Amino acid sequence: MFEKRRCSREMDENLSSPFIGMRHLLCLLIFCGLCLVYGMRVNLSMAIVAMMDNAAANPNFAEYAWSEQTKSHVLSSFFFGYIFAQVPAGSWARRYGGRLLLFISVSFSSVLALLTPLSVSVGDWPLLCALRFCQGLVQGVTYPTIATIMAEWAPIEERSAMLTYCCSGLELGIVMMLASSGMLCSSDWGWPSTFYIPGALGLIWSAIWFIFGASTPNNCKYITLAERTLIATSLKRNMAQSESSKVTHPIPWLKICTSKPFLVLILSQCAYSWCFWTLLTQIPSYIKSILGKDIQSNAFYSALPYLTMLGLSLVLCPLASYLEKSKRLNATVSRKIFNTIGQWTPAVTLVYLGFLRTDQADLAIVLLTLTVTVSTVTHFGFQANHLDLSPHFAGTLMGIANSASNMMSIIAPLVVGYIVTDTTNLHQWRIIFSLAGGISFFGNLMFLFFGTAKVQLWNEMPQMVVEVKRQDGQHFTEVKNMEKDDGNVGGSRETLNLV
Image (tube, rainbow, N blue to C red):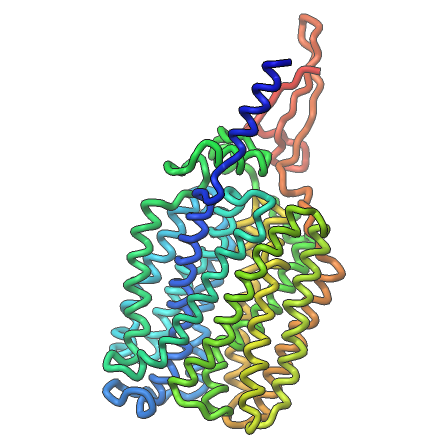
């Protein structure tokens, strides 16, 4: 009895990890990495305004007479590359490790950002489209890789908060890029500086990540035993579990692609992506053409919604963490409440925005800010749902969903380019905003009906229990993993338990 109490005390001591642990440092690194990745992703949204109207920005640099359709092709070219690596990225992260894949993504993207001004001067918009396509290709692995890393590092009770802290980096990246780009475009460095600065910082981050980043707690040199035990206990995993056993776990593609909760998750994510990228790529043009703001005030007003978005997401993290730990809300109910707030509020404000007059600039800025800010609440809705449905295949689910949703990132700017033929025409913008609001409403409606936070049966490898009787009369149950549903038994993992 004394030995049992002592073992219990030792276990409790092992589980009492420091308040700030290696998992939090990892979140900070991913936060900064996403900040730079999104800075390199959205810099063109503001730079292209200066590139097509340098008389208003910096006349020392070349001006490009591109049509609105050409502009839409340039802005969407990134996403044509972005969708290609999404689906296989989850499998790559499981096989080769999230640390390596995230390093490749950020470092290669940084080099391409540094080469962007040269590509425009040499090959005009076709070469720019090709470079942005390649940049989208290497950034396509980012989110599936982060989901795979978080599935290994985030205790269940901290899952939403940690994932939201990480993903908040995108908002800071947008804020910093949009807020500074107006000043940079008007400076002596001109619009090329909006590519040089995040590219150089991205290479610095890559060096730091290469030293401190880790795919799993078991691969981390700096984590304490207490923190490693805490994470493993929360995830109910054996700390000594080999990486090879996870690699041989087959991906149930058919079950994933026919899973109703996952399909509505994709639908909700597609609806969010349509609204998010419509606003992100078109807010600068709308503010310039409809609200009549100059390049510097344009940059400030374009960044303001994402600044408030970042603030709200950081404020809500402790609330979401409290709700998860206190068990006051069922996980499924929590996801649906947050998702409804994050998608139906923007649906209303977007439609309202479309019916404003050109002399209501202040109200338009307020509605734009409110629309983008409230959408961050979806971090606690569908955006955390990939880890809920399947912790083991979180990266794969994220890749499939991101690939589908980023089709909207391609289509949305193209739709704007074909509908908004005259950027000063308020009625054409009304169509764009009303369409985005309707899509957001429908996406969440389906999530309310069919969404769930329950772990799906296909998360684990199918198993077959076989009763074995030895010659000495003892009975055992043998649990064998099955690689196929037809009963073929795989030999990747076996355990024996005495009956």
